[in-house]
Amino acid sequence: MEEARQLPEDALPVSPAVEGPPPPHRWAERDPVAAARLARCREVVVRIAGAHRLPPENLITPDSIRRLAWTPPEEITEETVTETLRGFGARTWQLGLLVPELTAVLPTP
Image (cartoon, rainbow, N blue to C red; front, top):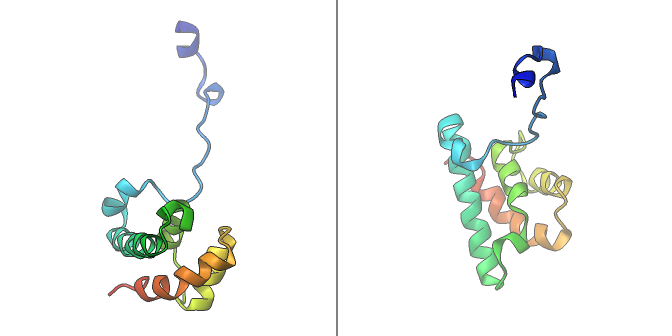
């Protein structure tokens, strides 16, 4: 233990940089607008998943929705939302079910 305390600063382990948005429980304090966007997007996913008798996480990965809500496309259109989600690995059937409604709820009301 004492040996570790004696290590110089540049010899200490460094946590790798985190890619993507912060944990959702921190959004309200970091970016309230993004937190509200995430809540609206999650409502869409839960509703559509329920209508198709799917768990929401089987309809689309939670990470994809978090990334979309944290950093939406600059211009929000069905095309840009489709390309964003496709870039996160969403499949065509998922896009067909989700994109129209996600596009509608992404802009700040």
